[in-house]
Image (cartoon, rainbow, N blue to C red; front, top):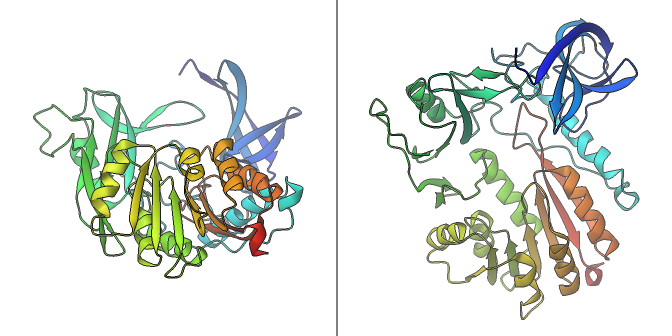
Length: 401
């Protein structure tokens, strides 16, 4: 048994609402705990696990039997569901997953009085609910086998086929199993529309017949080729990324005279479409690797200007007030200085793309208190079978309302 956890007993519990980890909550011996594999309202038999997190003892539950079944429960198709914990919601029918994600966003917004009356739109479904992930990070254990670590028990589980990954990634996974003893972590990226791949780090084992250690790979979105370097961000759901870029462009409300800023521009995914519908796009990015990718990806678009800088500095130093700013920060959200720079610049329209509704709500609260009006919140399901949800929020400035 792993020294970091202990199964202390099995008990029956009634499940409450989902928490931020995508688990149902329940009360165990007077303490609220997180339960994996349940649905609100169900009565279940649960294994209680004690584990340590940041030095503190925690309790969590894993459903082992369902005594009162939710109407939304379905048989989970993946044999690793539960031991893996990478998917939280495979046991929930997909239409209800979409409802839950909208509800999750609404609940987080209601914590802020200035956001509590916002009508969150219905979640945009993903074109595919399996085989959509173009990027995998595997843990390597036990004589070079790849898999994932259970977030509750911390047990490693070898995974020979992940139902969320593209067919290309699973084909590579099959070839690599038992052959990657020289590293403890392995990343695989796969171009759905190009069939190119990137494996990092480079594998020295001569039994591996695949190329590895690539510095970049290419993917095609909306007919445009994108080079993506190993450290650069790229949306993990290729088909849904095309839907997302269309929604973002529509919400920018562009015309041939529009001047737009793509903050956190990355490899230029949004920049490319914005440039087709506006007078000028300023692409801001702090990562030199991403800027290098973007300059190649957007070659030939004469109305694009790159600025390698911190977002807040670049926005404040602009010689004009942008008609729109697209903000797509990391999961941690925007640094307060970025929000302050947008408020000081009095940007006319903000389209904020977020993969974390919690930090999104925090940042929107600041912008609304600063004078912006939140007019639209659109959840987009980039991550089926998990509790994660992408959102697009649209705000207009003081002069526009």
